[in-house]
Length: 105
Image (cartoon, rainbow, N blue to C red; front, top):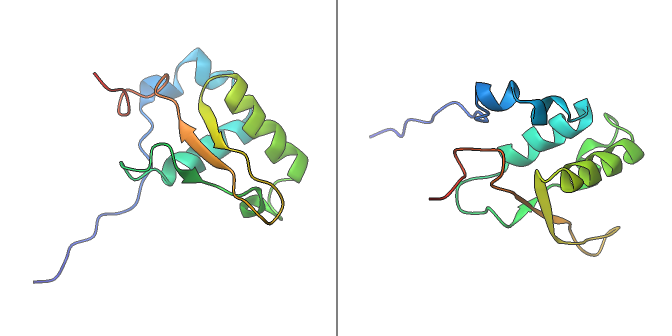
């Protein structure tokens, strides 16, 4: 029997997008949050890898750096492991503060 594949998507509810917290994010913060969330598969909640180089040629390095830091300061993500250059990867996790799908309990 042939496997049926679903269309890939990122679930962000309307109430999140309509919230003041979402509107306070810069466009770059929103893009990076959506990209981080697209890499969340249900079991890697504290091990999401998104290298800065992924945005090379689309968003400046400084804008990416500021967006990641903004998301951390505003409580949308956490940095689980600090990477740098070519040796280690930055590892992030989504906080459970702004997403009812990820909230436990």
